[in-house]
Amino acid sequence: MNPPAGAPGAVRVYWRPGCPYCAMLRLGLRGARVPAEWVNIWEDPVAAARVRAITGGDETVPTVMIGTQAMVNPSAGQVVAAIRDAQPGAFPPAGTRVASWLGRMAGLVSRGRLWPGAQR
Image 1 (cartoon, one colour):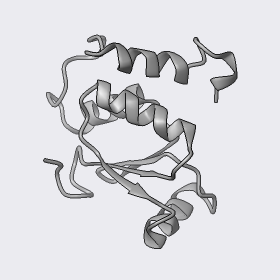
Image 2 (spheres, rainbow, N blue to C red):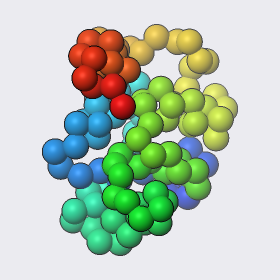
Image 3 (cartoon, rainbow, N blue to C red):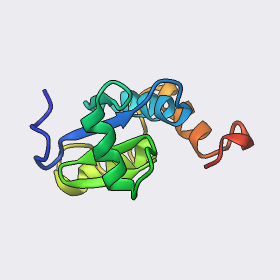
Image 4 (cartoon, rainbow, N blue to C red):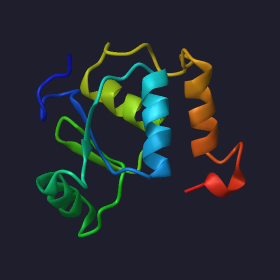
């Protein structure tokens, strides 16, 4: 169960269908076993307005809220690191391998190591 939004360690991901970066983040967070609330900004105008407020007017996704900290287009590793900072002991120490091959692949793709065109 997720902590309430705004609580330390609570993860809310603002996304939209068809976004490859959102898909990669979803794979990476699943592989790292990070529970998150996923909010589709195309179905929730309040969420879209929240993203625009965070990003300075753009609807850049994925935008992630961890407690009160906003992250725009982060990797799964960056999200896990932010959760570790917000909730020490919530995850194994940094450097621990992601449990699934799918999570590792998501990390490689998001860093452009498998497909150079996938770099951000």
